[in-house]
Image (cartoon, rainbow, N blue to C red; front, side, top):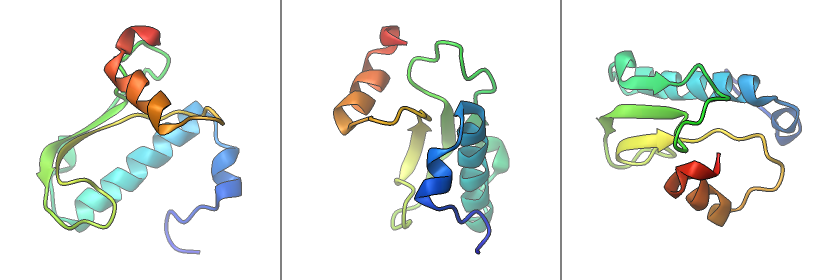
Length: 99
């Protein structure tokens, strides 16, 4: 297995804290690979606090052409909800009072 390789079955067993830690590790590894500052990765440690739909932030521009990180700065939302559509994600981020 590769570093940080995870199956969908393993992913489905993670709780909110474990998912947030995994996302942080994955984002941190990508920043390192891109030789970008680790300090530009900001992840909330209070996962149960209302956060306005944002659990993490890459505050440094990611260059165009990355295989899975969007270019520029990006915000990240972690959720362990089993049924979560693109519309749900949009509403969670754009309507922070629904936490």
